[in-house]
Image (cartoon, rainbow, N blue to C red; front, side, top):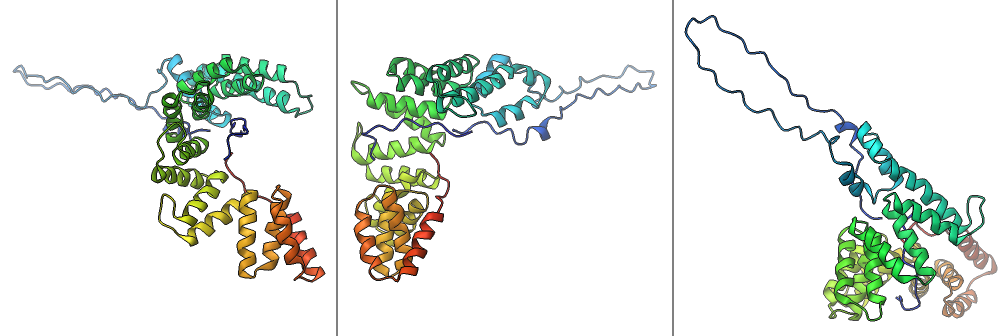
Length: 344
């Protein structure tokens, strides 16, 4: 299941970690208390008896976990993790049934929202499905319902759903709640950074990028380039393309960390290979300056297709230095090019 992201606004400019159930099947065995019969002695005299040591605590028996606690813990889980958790024992399977039902409602909600799976797009039906999934406890459905409310302009309802998801530990809900406080009128910097930081520490790369932007631009917090580059790097290493581009620029000019042209080129190429059009333009220019004309044309062609109008002029200059077959080959490479998968 793909992670949900915040709707991009004009000023943006520039799921989550969950409990791992990968080894639960191996831990399904329960420890057993063994009761050993005491052997009697044939001694005539009365022997003094000592009380046996208390049995060890059965730390492996999670079947007695209260249903309400279990459902709160499992609220942010995706379908594969829910299925794994449900297979632990009958008690868990019964407790998690509403959450499994919410996954079906979530799937239908996405179909109605995007017009997929043979159904016509219908935002009202999508919202109804998401709300039913949210009522069964799924934070994924809460966030998607919040996104629909936000698109419809009902921001208070959206924020309410984000808060419910955030308080249950959903990193996407935490991030969206933090951005809601940033965009509020008036904004609430303290609450915004609180929730963004929780989301970032839970491993959500979009929140890591948002924190870096705030620290870099001095939005709602004091500028701190050292901290900003730390969060850019975390987000970039987590696969967030915009962070790859920004950390490349930081390395290039030595902003917030020591200047390093080699690392700058490496991150710029990664951003370009993941589909960032500005990075494709920058990387194409670098290749042109090095004399790698065919590769330069391919990246400049991709940048132009991505909306970078400046790439067209440079590409035409290179075309004049190439034969017709070489130009055709470069364009054919661009046609067959596919972006590497990235975190959204």
